[in-house]
Picture 1 (cartoon, rainbow, N blue to C red):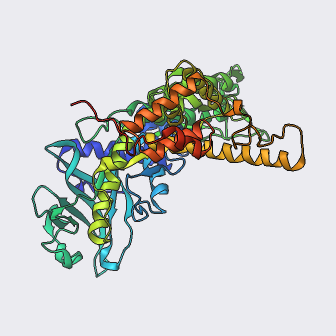
Picture 2 (cartoon, rainbow, N blue to C red):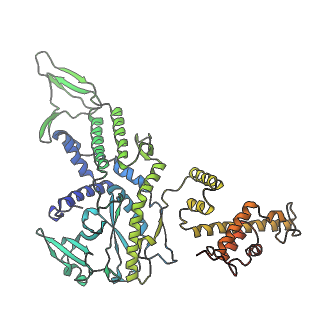
Picture 3 (cartoon, one colour):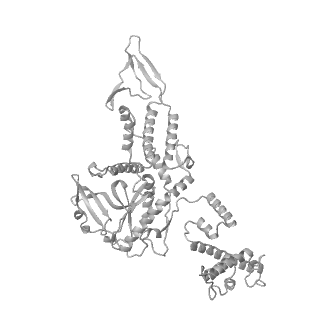
Length: 555
């Protein structure tokens, strides 16, 4: 999007930031041909650049290639949980996750990204609406108490007047006062004048979004680098510059492949009528256009007769291409990767940069704090709008939203290795079953959920074991056991007796119920499921503990 210089921010720092962020967005969208041409003109002599800029090579874009591979956090919808069982559909809309996939890519490439939340209550909206806002179209004033969050946002938007004329406007959202400030200013003749009445007459003197009497800032700023500042727009400029230079060098390579990969012919004291003069970059250059079917006639211009000869080829394409491949592979390190994170391919394309699985996971872990903070703020802000304009009662504290990014799934080998490691830790008494479950299943965020998972497995195993026993008794297969001498459990008494370690564990459960740290019903269920005994036997073991018998803690 072309923005006239008269519309640019007044602050030179914001102007420089807009230029850098706009360039990175063009690299992501593939709309960077003019930027490559500018890099070629800065790199080569005028007459050479004039020829190269005719058709730049855009087939190599390490900037986009690397960041697209690293953008794995939103590969699958993230898991969002809150303490209460409430409907989050007004916040978790179908369009949110596709938007977050693009937002994740922008965050990686620009270091900061921006999402705007709207709730169109004037047309009966029942859910939040999200849109990505280019950082290169906003000027933000930070909150004095939270330097990394916006307090005032001025967004540049092109609007159409009733007459059909397109004009540039600044939409201003300011939460620095109790009542908030919203207005639309139009830019004309280099000056800004209030045009709220023209474009949004219903909002004159009114702040659009209010929650519990306070203005709500609908812009959420995400940070790849968590710090006490709004922007980190200079970081990563090496990969951006190297990607443009890669296109310039491959353009030069392509020109050399066509023009310099064969011996150069020369003529001494000879002239040809086939020659023409071209003006390249303001310089007149004599050339003889030929192909393999051409017959070029020469006339001697010297007393001793003319001489035709040739120089060796000026370029060897293969070695030149290999050098460029090494150059662009090194650029991936500027994205925060290590050499061990890369897998260099050598397929038919002749080059490739592939980020290894461990490199993807490491980058995902690095991004997680910034993504979590941004997504929690996003959902909490959307909840404020939902409560005010949708009649819901959702949490408005960002920390009430527990988020798990599924991202890159574990391979079978990684999963097996993780399970083996946890089994060894449990055998050594370093972790409990509850801790092991939480480590294996990141979506389980509380001990209560882990205990319920274990109980569910125990119940399932008990049902399956009972069914198998009944089938054996019915069919008379070997291993069937009568109820005689089993205490009514369908198994020998020795099978239901607890060993020393189990007795100690059972005693711990009973003591926890007596102390009031575990509900009686939960303790009985744990005894029954953990040690595979009937509920009646578990109740017998528990006795009056937790009912008439309790242990009062020492004062």
